[in-house]
Amino acid sequence: MSVFSHSARFLPLVGLLLCAGESLSAEKNTGTLLVKDGLGVPHQSVTIEAKLVGKGLFARSGMGGEPLELVIDGRVVGTAMTGGDGKARLAYVPKKQGIVPITVRVGNSPRVAPAAGEANLAVWERRSPIIVVEQAALIEQPSVPAPLPGIGLSGDIGPKPLPDAAEELAKLTQFYYRVIYAVPAAGGMDGFEAGEDARAWLKQHRFPDGYVLALPPGEQAMGEKIDELHAAGWTTVKIGIGRTKAFAEAFLQRRLEAVIVPEPKKGDAPRKAKVAKDWKEVRKKLS
View 1 (cartoon, rainbow, N blue to C red):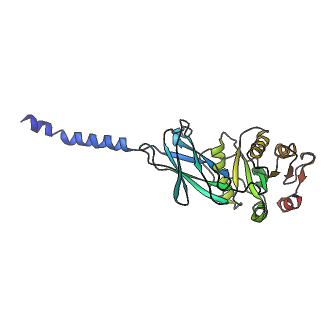
View 2 (view 1 turned 90 degrees about the horizontal axis):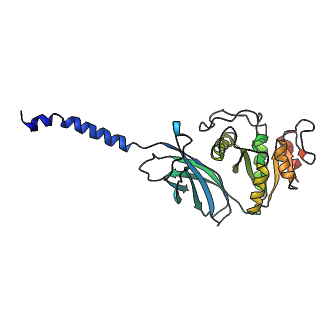
View 3 (view 1 turned 30 degrees about the vertical axis):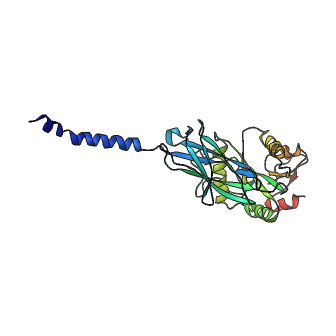
C-alpha cells in the first residue's frame, strides 16, 4: 500500500475536525441589551444609556468593545461602542415633542449574536408642567418583592395596580401634565434592570407613557434627583404624588407640593403634605 493511499484514509476525519472547529469558532455569544429612558427637549442633543450584558452564568458581566446602534422610526440615528462594563452612551437630537419609542441593538459584531432592547425617549418643552409619581403610589402591595433581575414581568406577574390609578393619571396627563415615574432600584437591581421591569409593568396595566426614572437606594435619592432635574433646567418639576413619607418630604423640603395616596395611617403623613384617600381624589388636591 502506498503512503498516499494510507494517508487518504484519514482525510475525511481531518475534514470533519476542521468543519467542527470552524463551527465552534463561528458560534457567537448571546447577550441582553438593557436601555434607560431618555429625557430631552426638541432640537437639543440627548444621551441614551444602554448596557450589554451576558446571559446565563454571565448575566451580570458587561460585554465590552461591541458596536451598538440607536434606532428610531426604523432608522439608525446614532452609534457607540460599549466600554469594559458593557455600557454605552448614544447621542441623538430629537426634532419633535412626545414620547418616542427607541430601540438599541447590537451592530455588526463578530462575537455577539443579534440582540436589542427598548425604552422611551421623553421629548418635552421645559415649560411643560411635570408631576413625579412614586411607583409605590400606583400599586396595591408595595411590599411585594421585586422580580429577580433578568426575569422581567409578564402576564399577571407582579403587584396589582391601585383602583383607578391608571385612569386618573391618564386624565392628568392627557392635556396638561407630563409624568415622571420614580422607581426604586431595589432587590439587587441596578437602574437599567429597575427601569426595564417598571416599563413592562406600566405597559401591562395601561398607564400613560412617561419617563421612568430609576432611583438608587437611600432616602435622599428622590431629593437629589429633584435637584439634578432643576439644575438641568427642568424647573417645572414641582409636584410629587407618592406613598411614602420619605418621598413626600423630598418635595416638601424644597418647598414643593406633595400629595400622598392612598390615605396613610394617622401620623404617617408629613404635616404639610396633602392627603388623598384614593386616586379619584388626587386631581382635587392639585393646585
